[in-house]
Length: 154
Length: 154
Length: 154
Length: 154
Image 1 (cartoon, chains in turn orange, cyan, green, yellow):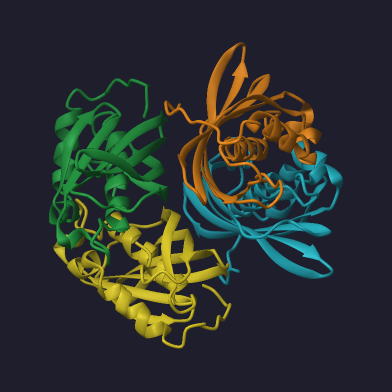
Image 2 (tube, rainbow over the protein chains, first blue to last red):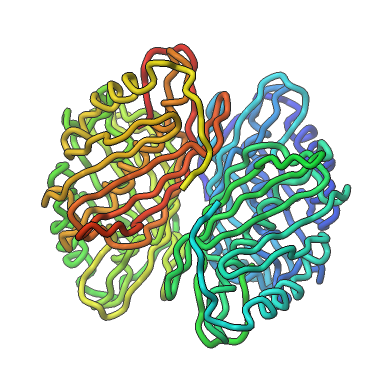
């Protein structure tokens, strides 16, 4: 959870965030959708499909990582000025429960927005019978590249 | 790179490692293959496909994470006794170059094998015109569950 | 910040947490004090001294790491049953601002309490003229050893 | 271990690396010495003292973190051009054994030198009866600030 409220520096932040996300071949291929975009916050969701599983039929940890990385990266991107782009420098993720459920949800928040580096954090929940269980948590570093076209995280 | 040589405690380590990997729906869906299995070492490879890309057409960072996590996890699994299984506790990954090339290769090594926890590390390379470029590096913690069926990392 | 409320399983949680902390030679040597102990939460504080600095006279990043690691570890310890001990498996820390001020404060919270592994997170603030600035943030994994004397994190 | 050989861009790399280190009040206070400096590599050592311990009388994990962070940071610093400085962006450390012994040794290597960000890794060993045991391993991100005085990591 994150109580801090941020203001976007780009009035078109939602449109460019959604546009950038829509051009990720991998996210489209995996059926991941961008559910929510707010300044400094992004939520992604993916419905269960056999192609998204590990050997027990649960959501794969690799999917949790990819979704959390992307949610956090676009949360950072939503706060950047027009023309800026972002890159994932690194992230660390803890797995806290198996991904057993009908839907996977990744939420990314900006923790500390810097001019060059933005620190974000994210939580991944699996939803089963309307109950959300935390299955992963992430701490991430994003680099901002000013005025260099459009190249969001990933 | 890793100079340490380990001995497998399970004579069938290669067969069970390959078998476990083959049951990952996500890895199959993404076209990832297990190229090499040695005691404490695993190499995975994926050929370029548009479905594996981010918005610039390079290999997606989420794929690098999923492949490195899996390579490291199975490197740990290859050293466990018969009947044991492994789970990813957590990992940290640095992205060092864009994934621009024809093939992505993830190598995972055991750094320190414990009875309950195994520390591994991994490197991801992208191959373009026969030149390997390091594009990500990982440090990972794996938990060993003794005598509990077969449930490798992920 | 962390909204989750936990219940201690050991009625003496505060006494044993403070007692364990008091036996860290390094913490005493550095003048670190345990300001607050609640179930799943610990706050440590250290006043400015020249011995705690890096080359610019600010609080040293190594001190931030040691204090955050200890605050998070004892936050986990406060939730363990009688007789249990904890060990730091690993942590990751982002530095977000220089430690320029009169006092350094590390807060550790339990994020997800497991039977064997506890995931915690922590924030380090520097206080200058009554203003708190976030200078580091941590995500940590703690291992619980049941019934083995008293051996908290560190 | 690291096989890569780097060339220093500053002919005075050893002198400025040792000079920067000597101005860390915390390192002096803890009795840490810079044993070796090579381009892209630094080794630090600290002899056992009761002030460096946790509650069992072993070297404190906080000291391992501070020494590994500093060794890795100065390994990065040794490769920077004249006038540059470095800052720790973040690091992740796994603890692999208790610090039981007479001397603690931290080695830091550059893994991938970038213009703005340098990825390093480090190992911490405890030495007891001439036997080195790995007790921690680190993966770290360093930021380079060009032409801005002298402000090494920490």
